[in-house]
Image 1: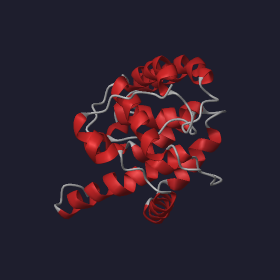
Image 2 (image 1 turned 90 degrees about the vertical axis):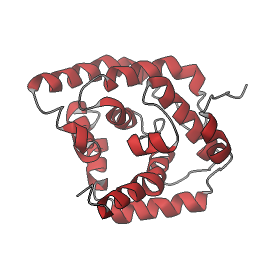
Image 3 (image 1 turned 45 degrees about the horizontal axis):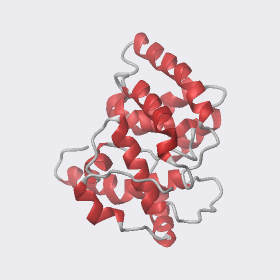
Image 4 (image 1 turned 90 degrees about the horizontal axis):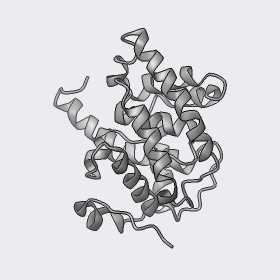
Length: 213
């Protein structure tokens, strides 16, 4: 049976029917590669996550959750909380390690996803954006990252159920794409699309207004 996702009403008409073609997705990925300087750090984190999970999380949070990351390293206690949360989530990640974004039924794994997201997002300095980054780090084939700009654009809140609904919406928009690029998962490509079309454009507007340096 197909999943019945409940999306915010404003999103349904504007976004749900708009499937993104492969050509556009690849174009946005090329733009991302051209402007985003943190790509090397992402690769580094992915390379060490199995042996050094805490260090990998620190790299990805410091690169793409910079505004909140300072609270993680503010005290040793915060790092201990992050380490403990990662350990707690390990068996949960193990349960869904073979799931793939394109064909997973998110309803069938929603309890596991919600528990992971809730555990990580409770940590000050990780929170909602950082939780999605860490989840992607441990399963890049399944989890799409988000940030506050992306949440606002798609009219989602920041709780676990909203994140699950966001994943369902992304699956509706991109799930039919036959992605065969090596070195990049479809979930990561979707993040790059969202970053270029949503986050980057809003950051540029803020920079022009002097809000962001």
